[in-house]
Length: 423
Image (cartoon, one colour):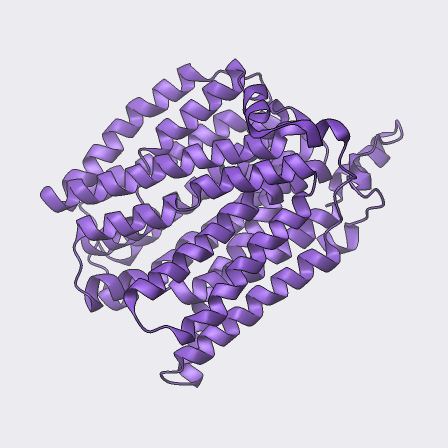
């Protein structure tokens, strides 16, 4: 449906961003179209995420049950996995703004991640694998802000929530397919890990081809954009609205449990069989994929910041449920995974849709990177904190602490940042 509606002519912004004739019918038709840039970037993210998740689907189970690491070490690894992209996000965002080539910078990030996949069969030690995973996360950090800037430039402001929702839904579809593809490859070729790495590389390489061939290039950079250094870009972002939003997002990120720790904690607290651990992210991905577009549209209509806070509240509900629930088994697991999927659907793209219009155009990619980096570093700290509390206390204590403090943090975030009605 979306493919048949995508049309674009301008090299910077698709025709959906142009003013429509003053008729209700034509206006509705324009808003119903999805820009080709959004669809192409969604496809790139889909195959790239499928590639990445093929490699990482069994990582928590391998770490916990294969290597026998504890919650503290798992929290530290979760923290590294979450926070490794932070500084490179700013570097990628600044490079895109400095030279006016968001597409080129994003392509470089995707290419770096693809190259790490083909190198996996050549290494056999944990430190080497860790280095490849770090390189993959660096690629993700470089490409994320330029990619989101390309989406922002492709659609009118009033449709940003829907556009980011469509992109995140396609991205999450890849996260859903990755573990299934890995399972299928290993089922067809028992012990064929090299085959799985090869398939993963082919998917990642496909993403690079798609962004090169089908994502529209940036407009020619202006002399003013070339003249700005990093300090000038950061200075232009020092407005009360941007500062308060970044602070509030970082505060809530600090109280976000890392994914690996969350799924391992869920498995223990709800008595889910250990062998089912790699399947838990699929439940979250299904909810995320189904809810991302409807919630993005809702955010455009009712306000993006309030919906972002509702998403954080959903995560808080999942933590509190895992603290005090008398229920176990698959029904309880389905409820928690639904809450966690709604958390991602209502926060990931919605935050970018909220902050993008607040940023000056010449520093937009750098600004997106700053917010993403602040959130990533905060979430890395949260993952480490959760692992520490779980190691020296227990899982129930850790979920209780994060759930209860999150309630206070949500109230504080609501006071820190008070945007307009539709922001």
